[in-house]
Length: 66
Image 1 (cartoon, one colour):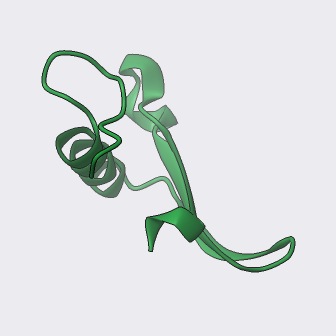
Image 2 (cartoon, rainbow, N blue to C red):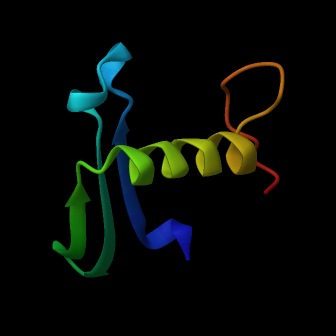
Protein backbone atom coordinates (compact mmCIF):
# COMPACT_ATOMS: atom_id res chain seq x y z
CA UNK A 1 0.00 0.00 0.00
CA UNK A 2 1.48 3.36 -1.00
CA UNK A 3 0.08 5.04 2.13
CA UNK A 4 2.74 3.22 4.17
CA UNK A 5 5.55 3.94 1.73
CA UNK A 6 8.21 6.59 1.40
CA UNK A 7 9.26 7.39 -2.14
CA UNK A 8 12.01 9.96 -2.66
CA UNK A 9 13.25 10.39 -6.22
CA UNK A 10 15.82 12.83 -7.58
CA UNK A 11 15.84 13.23 -11.36
CA UNK A 12 19.45 14.37 -11.45
CA UNK A 13 18.57 17.83 -12.78
CA UNK A 14 19.93 16.86 -16.20
CA UNK A 15 22.86 14.82 -14.86
CA UNK A 16 22.27 11.05 -15.01
CA UNK A 17 25.11 10.40 -12.55
CA UNK A 18 23.11 12.26 -9.89
CA UNK A 19 19.84 10.31 -10.28
CA UNK A 20 18.76 8.41 -7.18
CA UNK A 21 15.70 7.05 -5.45
CA UNK A 22 14.70 5.77 -2.03
CA UNK A 23 11.81 3.32 -1.68
CA UNK A 24 10.89 2.37 1.88
CA UNK A 25 7.95 0.84 3.71
CA UNK A 26 6.98 1.91 7.21
CA UNK A 27 6.63 -1.27 9.27
CA UNK A 28 6.16 0.24 12.69
CA UNK A 29 6.61 3.47 14.63
CA UNK A 30 9.84 4.97 13.31
CA UNK A 31 10.72 1.63 11.64
CA UNK A 32 11.36 1.55 7.91
CA UNK A 33 12.60 -1.10 5.49
CA UNK A 34 13.78 -0.12 2.04
CA UNK A 35 16.57 0.52 -0.39
CA UNK A 36 18.38 3.25 -2.26
CA UNK A 37 19.10 2.97 -5.96
CA UNK A 38 21.40 4.95 -8.20
CA UNK A 39 20.54 2.85 -11.26
CA UNK A 40 19.46 5.33 -13.96
CA UNK A 41 17.05 2.84 -15.56
CA UNK A 42 15.31 2.12 -12.26
CA UNK A 43 15.09 5.81 -11.31
CA UNK A 44 13.63 6.68 -14.72
CA UNK A 45 11.08 3.84 -14.37
CA UNK A 46 10.03 5.09 -10.91
CA UNK A 47 9.66 8.67 -12.18
CA UNK A 48 7.59 7.54 -15.18
CA UNK A 49 5.37 5.36 -12.99
CA UNK A 50 4.74 8.18 -10.51
CA UNK A 51 4.03 10.70 -13.27
CA UNK A 52 1.63 8.44 -15.20
CA UNK A 53 -0.12 7.01 -12.13
CA UNK A 54 -0.35 9.93 -9.70
CA UNK A 55 0.02 13.18 -11.66
CA UNK A 56 -2.44 14.82 -14.01
CA UNK A 57 -1.61 15.34 -17.69
CA UNK A 58 -1.83 19.14 -17.43
CA UNK A 59 0.41 19.77 -14.47
CA UNK A 60 2.42 18.15 -11.74
CA UNK A 61 -0.18 18.27 -8.99
CA UNK A 62 -1.28 14.96 -7.44
CA UNK A 63 -4.43 13.22 -8.60
CA UNK A 64 -6.02 12.56 -5.24
CA UNK A 65 -8.76 10.30 -6.59
CA UNK A 66 -6.34 7.43 -7.42
